[in-house]
Amino acid sequence: MVMMDTLSNALTTLKNSEVRGKGEAVIAPASKLVAMVLRVMQRYGYVGEFEYIDDGRSGKIKVQLLGRINDAGVVKPRTSVKYAELRSLPVWLMKLLPSRDIGLLILSTPQGVISHKDALERKVGGVILAYVY
Image (cartoon, rainbow, N blue to C red; front, side, top):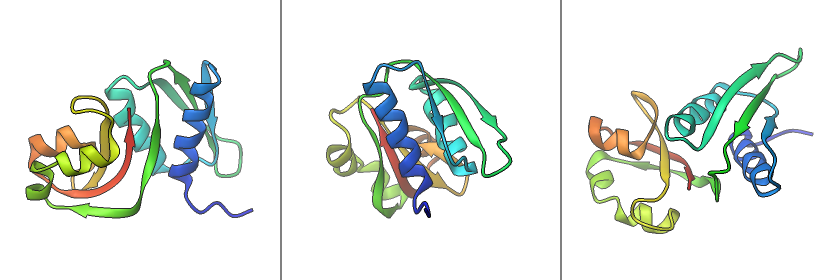
């Protein structure tokens, strides 16, 4: 079986484990992008600690769940946004997030994978990868 979108698989695994009330989730296969997205989610308190487990293949990531994820998913097609468009973000927020101050958009920017809040502070645009609330 060939996995097309590891990020989508990872976020679905997190969401499903959260819904079932589990304390941790194991994401396989692991990737650098998944780890960077998890780091952003950890910074904003959506997930706890996570660790990479080398299984001799593509690896796994064990993630501690905190019960804070209501929904998480990828944005397809991947959409580029300039900083000017990011300032008028309500368009994206209304499409992807339930309310004004709830949730995060996760972007891939020239400064790394960051939240939309950090992108606004740093005045950079990027590609919207995912959302979580």
